[in-house]
Image 1 (cartoon, rainbow, N blue to C red):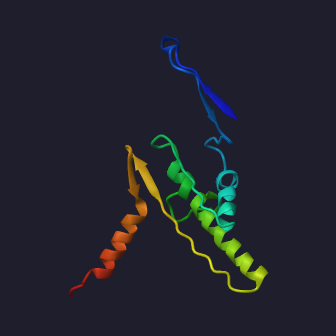
Image 2: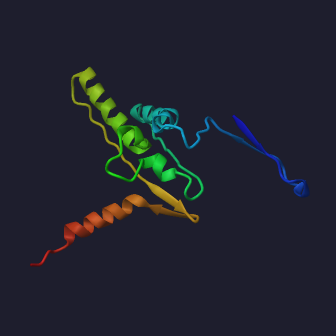
Image 3: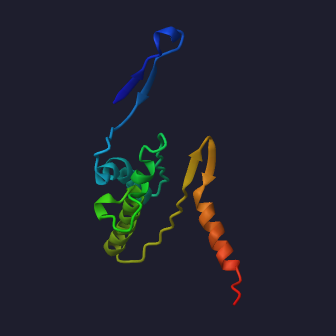
Length: 143
């Protein structure tokens, strides 16, 4: 689809802007549908040996974290999982399928990074995990 944004009449010197999009989801859209539409094609691209990026953008509180990860509770059902758990499940299942199909070991290396853009600053979310692991590995427990 295409969305046209026209400037208000008092800003007639500005040009109309055109935005292209593939799909639109509302708050009732199932997580599976979002994964199938947005992320499965990216995962298939990865399995073929290419890089992929899935980018969630939107206003604070609009559901980005929920869409990416799913609900923040331990009793979440499989239907509620976000696109990251679904993508990992898909990728590892595909590696297992290829291993069985080929009959030999399939060697694969995946690098995953997560960054956050907040107030025009980029934060490496994986760095916090790495730093806490390094701290834990070098900490001395007394007692």
